[in-house]
Every structure is written in structure tokens, then in C-alpha cells.
Image 1 (cartoon, rainbow, N blue to C red):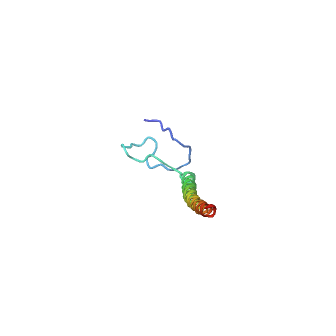
Image 2: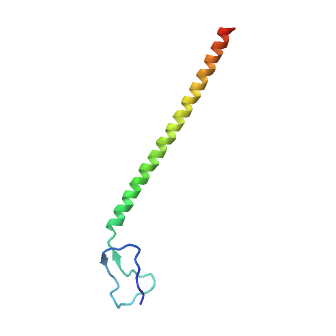
Image 3: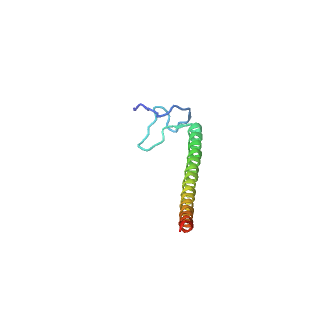
Length: 88
């Protein structure tokens, strides 16, 4: 006889092995209603997908920003050359 210590409380929906019945290693002793944990898992998966999408958007913004900086640096070089030519 062993005492069960569930990680989460829940409602028992099935008990294949009845109290006092024999069970061997690996037998399912009881099934707990998993509706709430399944919903929580689904919500976590959705939140994870949303977070991954935000990371993708942030990476894209960084790439755009870098490209803009490079374009501005190139424009500054052109203006410096134009200034040098005008001063000569």
C-alpha cells in the first residue's frame, strides 16, 4: 500500500484499479480530469508563438535600422566629397 501525492489537485474521472485491488508496476491507478491543464498548455503554446513572432519582428526592425544607418553613412560620405569638391 502506497500513499499518492499528486502534483496538482484534480477530480478523478476514472479508477481502473479499485481500492484494495492488485496492481503491478506500470498499471494506471487513476485518471484525473485534465481539462484545465490542457487549456493552460494551449494558452502557454499560444503565448509562446506570440513571443516568437515578437522576436522575429524585433530582429527585422534591427535589420532595417542597420540598413538605414548604412544608407545614412553613405549619404554623409557623398556630402563630404561634394563639400571637398566645392571647397577646392
